[in-house]
Amino acid sequence: MGTLIFGMGVTLTACNVETERNDDGSLTMTSVMSDAEVQEELAAARNTDNRTVTADLHDGYIALTVEGQNPETGESGTLTFRATPGIADGHLNIAISEALRNGEPLDAARLTRWNERLATRLDRRADRRPNRTLESVTVTEDTLTMVWRVATPRSRGGQ
Image 1 (tube, rainbow, N blue to C red):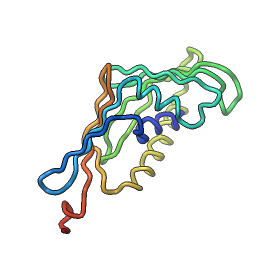
Image 2: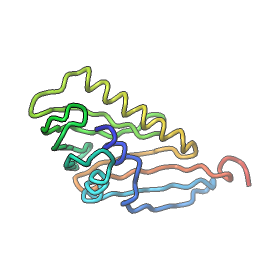
Image 3: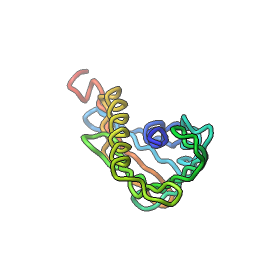
């Protein structure tokens, strides 16, 4: 499940990206994904061979439904949850809440583990891009928009 969100937040292959040079030489990169592009990105995420993933954008969060076989238990069922993107120390952070498996609430300990695992994966990915700082992330009914500042040698004082 964390892989699905990880794919959505970090792999922005299907989105429109605009790049603008700032006065200090850094870059501002704005990526905009439509609801259809978010859906495509999640469908292409790893570990979804036996599952169908549906994303529904709302103001401030993404409602996700995963239907199919649980890779841990082999049981079929439906998992629904709310993914709320945010920023932590200049990096993408996603909080998972309101998780239900087959209509029953997931226990708090499991939800805590999922959020911790997801945060760890996102942190590892962020470490590979030390020059990029996420400045904003916005979800509306139609789009997921992220704005980064990318440091360049010029903006760090080099020529």
